[in-house]
Image 1 (cartoon, rainbow, N blue to C red):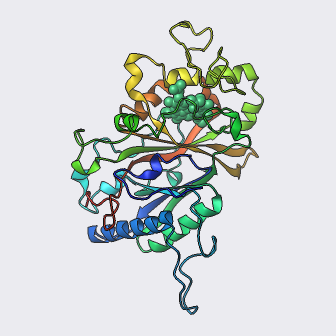
Image 2: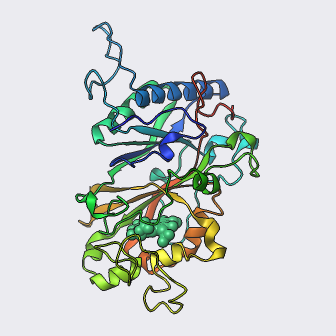
Length: 371
Ligand code: HEM
């Protein structure tokens, strides 16, 4: 495991590879009374993230005081591919801080989309923190350090944690994990090490029709999507594969042999091989007109016990990053509206956020150009 460098023009945890197996999303309400306190909070958050990602050892303090960290990871917390990304919600641009004119142009409170049952207690927020690492204890350690540092100004609104890597990681040619429907998830994702692709599809650029401070940031969409897994497990394999558009075991597009084979929809205009309403065909029809809607997915699976009816509460924390909400997530979601897979899944929470531009060097802080 390595250290993910903290400094950069963009937040490094959006694109760092490999995508580590443990993830957590924590959404906060800001209690900062004014813009000065908001800046102080962002400086504290920045310094703590820098310390966590760069492995700054905790100082030994007078035993009459609480120790500087929880001790969960011992004296020298290992790198563990830890990365932390910070985003802000539309609500941060309300009347409180006088930032309304600086709101990223497309940033709104996530509306109810088709098939959604959004629970307000598990949706939205002023500040979203995404933590990823190889191991869950590293993730928990980081969350507690961040909260301890900001406890006067940030209070929790909702938290969701989960995991990515499956039990047989070698099975996927692309190294992608399986989601809780049992399908390899991530095959046709954008390759985040390809800087040209990231510039085109993920980062807001200086010339975009956006407030200047947003350059190097990215729209961040979170969808907490419950899966009705018992129902899914009683569905015939052929039907499952037709709903997704890929073979379950190999991850290959229907009718192809290998996970990395490309589907050829032009040779299959009537959907005899890949149904026209299969998830992957709707999400990305691979036509020139839809080429602008690619997005960078970086989600994870979650399980959180069971509901009052005795059904498992499991699903996908769908997370994606894009340069424009309209061109990215909203275009793809619009095509997915009404897809047959909806019978097995339901969005229950999440939110629209804007991942702040990166912290370029020592002394700089997250959100610096906004404030
Ligand atoms: C592809 C599952 C929700 C966008 C896939 C694949 C699977 C999958 C198995 C094929 C492997 C891959 O290329 O990664 C699911 C499940 C979902 C879900 C189970 C809900 C629980 C969403 C949502 C969006 C989305 C909400 C965006 C609005 C995409 C895209 C692809 C994809 C863009 C790639 C299609 C391609 O380029 O061929 N999904 N997905 N998915 N999904 Fe989803």
